[in-house]
Length: 59
Image (cartoon, rainbow, N blue to C red; front, side, top):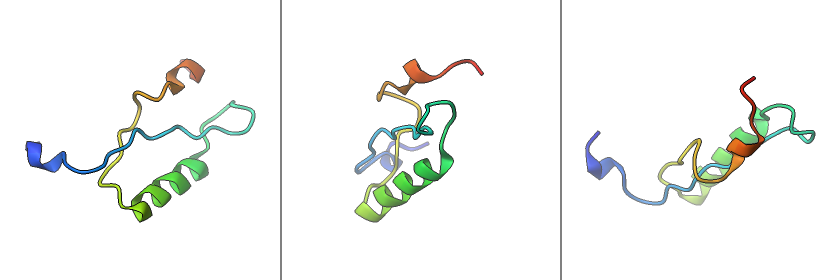
């Protein structure tokens, strides 16, 4: 990938969980991505730097 593709605003994407934290909530994640796109971000950084890995298990 050429470096010029990595420009603009690219926030770390928070991982949406169900209320009981037992699973990913894909509807919440989808809603967040749509909101960020509508706000004008150029991309999102998935799976890093926002600490959710501490809530995840191997399963």
